[in-house]
Image 1 (cartoon, rainbow, N blue to C red):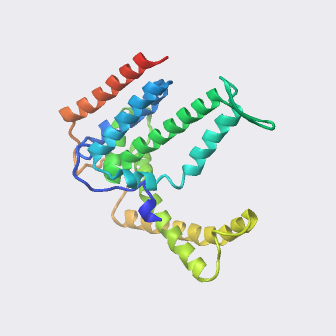
Image 2: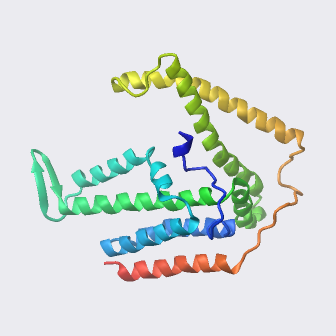
Image 3: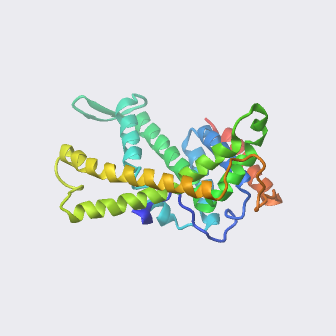
Length: 265
């Protein structure tokens, strides 16, 4: 399961994307989530897909690794595609089977929305795959620093997000171990009716929650033993430095937005 997990996992490679400032990557991700909605036709989605795959190439992450990590959410993408096919009544009628009617607009809209969902997963996954959790914490804290004037606990919020990202692959690994232990005792998670599969998952959740609470308590004790008292008065061992390549990366996002706006139908 860990080999297929991409969200929350960090791959320490040497690439142009890895070397970017975490603040630039966070701003890029937030901007991309907005820019992706500018695409509304086949040509604009082709440009968006090409831009995404160039990013993946620059990150030196194997594309097969990313596609393997899609397996947990592939059913959601397929469901979204089918939902638009059968509920969108636009364009020419392509297929009619009983009360089910498939229109050309439904197929087009389903393909576009599914592709948008796929590209968003790829780009957002690049953030955690190319940035260590501590760097994400420092970058997020730096971006939210102006909100300290509003008495917002910026450091604590950034730390909570970093710990959450760090614990996702840990919990997935723990789930994998518990599933193998349960299967060795005769549990079956892959066959039988849906009702029986749901019942088989219940004994899996109890030890998982117990393990999660135990890890959280151990982490709290370790932080307290090391004198952690929040972000007030803390200094940083690693300092963030904004470079020209970070400005170029954000400029490319504005160029992409302009191109997609120009190609909108």
